Amino acid sequence: MQRVNRLSSPGRDAPGLADIAGGELSALLHHRVLAAIGAAGGWLAFDRYMAMALYEPGLGYYARGARIFGTGPAGGSDFVTAPELTPLFGAALAAQIAEVLQLTGLDEVIEFGAGSGALAEQVLGALAGRGTALRRYAIVELPGALRARQQQRLARFGDTVHWLDEWPPAIEAVVIGNEVLDAMPVKLLHFDGRAWLERGVIAAAVESPPFVDGGASHADPGAAVAPAGLTFADRPTALRPPRADQALPGATVEVHPQAEAFVATLAARLVRGAAFFVDYGFPEAEYYHPQRHQGTLMCHRAHRADTDPLAEPGTKDITAHVNFTALALAAQEAGAEVVGYTSQARFLMNCGLLDSLGDADARMLAPAHKLLAEHEMGELFKVLAFARGVPFGSAGPLGFRAGDRTHML
Image (cartoon, rainbow, N blue to C red):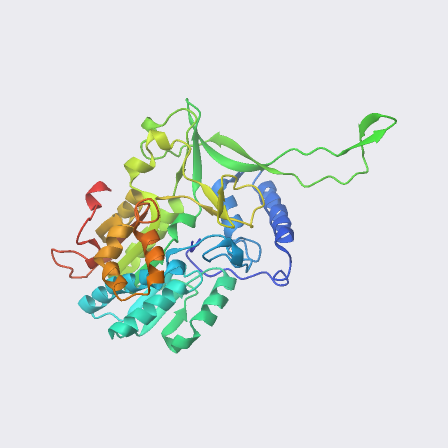
């Protein structure tokens, strides 16, 4: 799951931290979170905590340099993304990219959150195989550890690949992002049956460990006190989620101001070109359905999921599903045209993935099934596209010509 947090310069790994064990890094991050809580007056908004847990330089999950992408826990990875499963994913996306480049005469691709570099490698190879000329493939990646790995993996493409320290003021390119939106920090809102509250993080009270003296237990004034734990606390807020009137008492849901700001900024700077984002999520009506009253926040480590983002910060991924309606509206209100929204399965099939299977090794069948099957990634993952100045015509972009669901946003 490839991640971007802020919209400016990349994070730099803190010096001297690369060789410290993961548990020690987590302890250091824990202390830094406690300091941030103190500096904030004793209560830290969850989105600020999530940003630290994922991106704190040298300590956050994506900034500590550990191997996190892969196909299984045996190699030390935590989760798998579509490009890690099969190069057929990147080849299909390249077909959509090639169409936009041909229609516009553009020659640049910008990828946000390139992760391991697998998708960039696949897209660059597939475009070259199609004879599509590309002047530049630019990557916006915050954690320095990820950027270093990408540079090593993509070295064979020479000067075609560049890394950007900041956004271009005007964008004329095809923009892509795979599993980048779901790890942008979210705010948590809780409904107690009477009022909406914002959920944040506080330091849990900790007592000195007892000692035994003559059979009686006493607090030892000289004993070292363990660092305070972390726990949730709510406070009143004027924030409201979409469809707040449908919430059940006890509901806890996410809102996505950072992701919406990211999309709005991108759409505003998009002079000419198209943007395609692949991620897991729902349209608003499904996202805030009363049956989903505990939200979508989830953690991932060693190919297992858990629901405690406060435990061992920095050692696991923290994600939330995407509200595609909010992101489509953000793009539209910034002046871009929403040109497609569909399932990952339909998008990949429209872009020729099934045709590619005819020439593929038999070992490609199982990964392709995972990408397309409804009970795997095919339905949960969606593709959202917005554009400006691209003459798609009445048929629309290649990836959405059958099964478009823009009307459901």
